[in-house]
Image 1: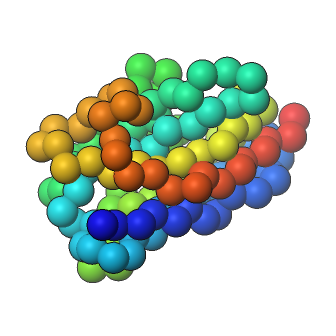
Image 2: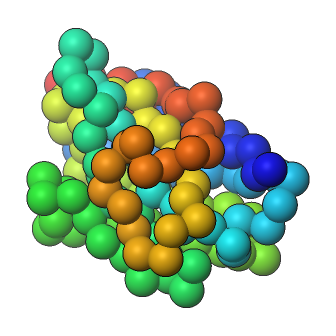
Length: 124
């Protein structure tokens, strides 16, 4: 079973950039589709985007447009979430999740493996 650990969260100012990492252990992350979700305070968890085993990406409707970019380095067993031009409304707990699906599921229930999450706070 693969285990996921997120890192890179913290407190930043609006307009800053932040890169989150999702490091896998236990099994090669290359065997999984990986997604990022976030949960803002008091709100539902939402799909940020995901990446296939070969590196194709798809993003949730609110994240299309280029501020957020997902990439992966299978050799490092890591998936990244690059976030640019951060806004206060990006404040959330960001979690990565892995699935054995072929395509990228957009629903959290379709992911059986989750990291513990990392907090991102954006001050305005």
